[in-house]
Amino acid sequence: MNYLLKPTKMTLQERDKKHLWHPLTQHQLHPTALPIVKAKGALLFDEKGNSYVDGIASWYTAMYGHCNPYILEKVTAQMHTLDQIVFAGFTHRPAIDLSEALMEILPGNQEKIFFSDNGSTANEVAIKMALQYHHNNGEKRSTIVAFENGFHGDTFGAMSASGLSVYNGPFEDLLLDVKRIPTPTNENIEEVLAQLQKLVETNTIAAFIYEPLVQGANSMRMFSPVHLDKILSLCKANNVLCIADEVMTGFGKTGKHFASEYLQEQPDIISLGKSLTAGFVPMAITSCTQKIYDAFLDNSIGKAFFHAHTYTANAIACAAALAGIQLLQSPEIQENIQRISAAHTAFNSRIQDHKKVATTRQIGVIFALDLNIEMDRYGAKRQEIFDFFMERGVCLRPLGKTIYMVPPFVITPAELEKTHTAIEALLEIV
Ligand SMILES: *Cc1c(COP(=O)(O)O)cnc(C)c1O
Image (cartoon, rainbow, N blue to C red; front, side):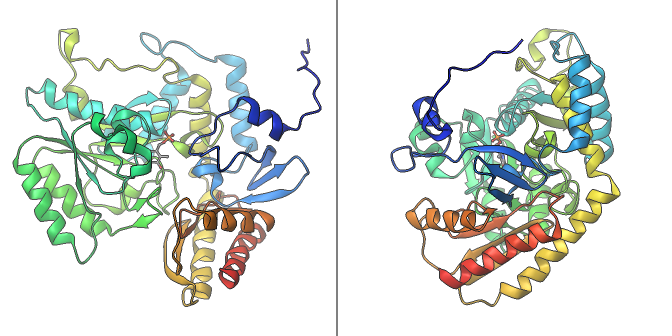
């Protein structure tokens, strides 16, 4: 059987414009999108056969490389066996295998796995879990604490916790009650702790949600685990649940499986997404401790967690995630992480004193630099820089004046060098 779409002389770009609405896009200013027809390893290919090094692993998803053959094999096998089954009342091997694989690598206090569809819903689940945890325990705690300028996603709960105004500005009056504290620095940490102390004393704080060590959407801002540990200790001493949003930082990007491993204090709840399923299919996970799970146990149904998405624990997505975790633990990928980290460090020493570089920062395979120029986060200059990189066969998406890389672990030394060289070339012309 074969079905053909209507023949057309229109290009993909023209057809795209007719019916498609792209995310984070002001279509009046940016009417065209570049069609990508193929991707392999660290490379993206357009219709003309031009290739681009995917310097951000397609928003940190395809970390084992696009169309990774091992994951493809596992996903294909799963597709032939079981695609989808209602996860209320039924279970399946891929979800069970995945839960066991995650327990081996997650922080030791994590015991239970709840599935959803994307990073936003993983955080939505985390926030609801935290709110209902206190409700089930008979405590009235309905305020969430979050960092200023954090990003946790675009659904209402996740958006409420996010501090970037272009995302949530229009909805400001409709959001959850969220109190914000500054991201800690050596200068402000005492002040941050004092602010937090005041908040926790009200006994109304349900949870603190944070991106551990790296705030992705906030221009890859990084902060010290020592400071974060102090914040988490204060939360824990006051029955405030700690939610680590590892949607971006999870699965090896910081040099450890999870950024939370750099900390002494372990989170009560962890959100996972993005590279969890290696860029193949969407899925997300919220993990939690036994203590949280137990607060939902009761002889009446009222205390249960009534949250479900139709595709909860989709078997194909679970197979992709399981294969991804197997790759993450392989010596090859671990060596690649070391290699990329070392190459970034060497690159840093090449450029850090350049007059156009204000600051640089790195953890694991995540590298960011701030340009020493004034720039709008969404202005014309940003577009020029994006185009400059694309013309050089490198896909990097500047966040305002921040240029950052989160390359797939399988990027070759030559592809990585091409990315570094393109950034060096940019420094000469900005
Ligand atoms: C991307 C991201 C999210 C949202 O994930 P989606 O899959 O886009 O909904 C949440 N938190 C962090 C830290 C992220 O980087």
